[in-house]
Amino acid sequence: MTEQTTDLKKTPLHALHVELGGKMVPFAGYEMPVQYPAGILKEHLHTREKAGLFDVSHMGQRLLIGPSHKVTAAALEAFTPGDFQNLGVGRIRYTLLLNANGGIVDDLMVTRLPDDGKLAIVVNAARKDVEDDFIRARLPADVKYIIADDRALLALQGPAAEAVMARHCPDAKALSFMTAAKTTFDGMEISVSRSGYTGEDGYEISVPAANAEKLARALLAEPEVLPIGLGARDSLRLEAGLCLYG
Image (tube, rainbow, N blue to C red; front, side, top):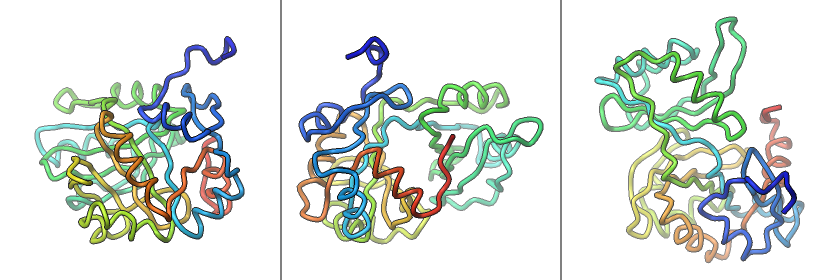
């Protein structure tokens, strides 16, 4: 490694990326696979045609916990344009963090959990530290901000994603777009959402870090699934006309 990469963090799937021949590069403070031996073009097309598995564990999983949904939602609404008071249980909303001038700090996804007063949020990897400080400074004393670094995050994207997930997690098939549930995958506890950022149908799966590799290997053993790196992730987003930070 060069001096520039010696302090890079690793996701729970780092060893698996190396085993699969991933070309590892610095990204948002982590060592991440930009591509695998198949190459960016094949990975891109495979995701459009079947299903691609992405490691997005470098993104920030966070919890807002207050005494009631009303209190927690109001706290988040103080610096976002979203209506979270009326967000249904298990529903997800895309929103923006706004500064005092209405400028965008970053975008994020917010899920209302079944437990009253709890909201789960996912923030972008390159902005985690900025957003952590930004949100903490604006929360009332009765709303806690929890960093869930003990969990990994994987995304299964593509037209075959539903069929693949249903073999391991039947509950996933019943989810509609922008909904989420706590369930199990081959007996492992997960939180799964019908969401993603590739322009395809698919899921994002939050799992305890200790089980991440087992879950990833189970998905990669399915004939429709290939591992996908950062290169195809960006090209898929650009093709779909989705925003990219920076």
